[in-house]
Image 1 (tube, one colour):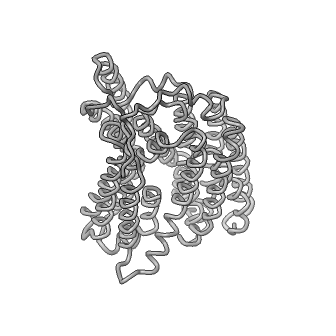
Image 2 (tube, one colour):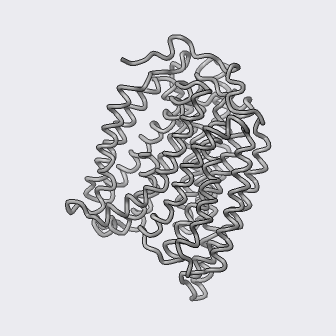
Image 3 (cartoon, helix red, strand yellow):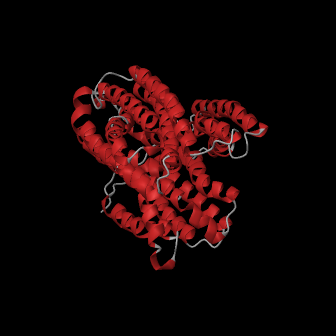
Length: 473
């Protein structure tokens, strides 16, 4: 919840932040993008740290760090301090988030995990859509004359409660043989991701200079060197940063591929959908955020039903049905946007939001469950970090595609002196074809997932050694 809220809450407060601390447009880009960049780069390392040092310990330390970074963000006196605090927030989130899925994976039996993943998915849906709403309400309320600062300071009581409850209820676990962190692997993985994600995050604002394409191309050989280094460590009997044997597990390898396609599609849709409502339709931030609650509330309900009722019975079919339903919802978006134009109302968007939200609930948490279902317990942190990294890479790719699918249409209208709300609506309509194509690709890739129901091979997973998981009293 903390991570998803913080990834979105700052967007509605950008004008207030810019006025208060005299931030340039470049600084604003770093305030918003620095968090995502640090989060994406640090996820693989964060997941492995839990395997090595203990998942509860890393979770508690990163929760403490995230809370402290939130306080620094809320007290920032200038743009430089705020940028640094946001990057620290992203790094702490990269350590914190992988532990959540890892702890679920090693704590609950396959019979119990469906309900837990359902709750996880429901809270994820609430967090994703409530960030803009909470941000808009806090900025407009101007609590104690603090302006935008409460959007970060609100994390303090939540973080402190999380620390207390985590210490009381979480059980420690770690991989018994993972004793040393691969620092060279950390450097190579971070470099590979940085070369890919940074130009995707900043390239469009800089006008796609040559260095952005050089950096993205350079990420490929950097990644190859990283893989070769991991193989060398495995041959030497050392602990790798990523357990390459995970990719021999069909459910994990296929699920990662689906997640990359789906993450790219969802990243493109979520950004352009927000711009469509606020700029194309001229809605206020609070109007757009409250309308989007229909999407999030439906997703939360659907996730619970999918994980507790549908997945145990139908397995992969649930994901495929969700993809087909999402495609239907996207065509609904297209029909409403094309027929109603800039006069679209919340009530006209409500039915397609309900359909799309229900479809998303049938995909996100079930896909995460399918990816991790056959992963050995001792590699849960590495697998969780890699899964989240692929999702963030997909989101970054989606943001990069927005420059082609969305902003290119707006730029053409601007050059023709026709920039208006209608131009942003037209851009969203054009983007929907890209999003629909991405969902069709994700649907086809889902056939590579095992048809079995999650947990059906639970007995084949390696058992947790007796000394790995000890309850904290």
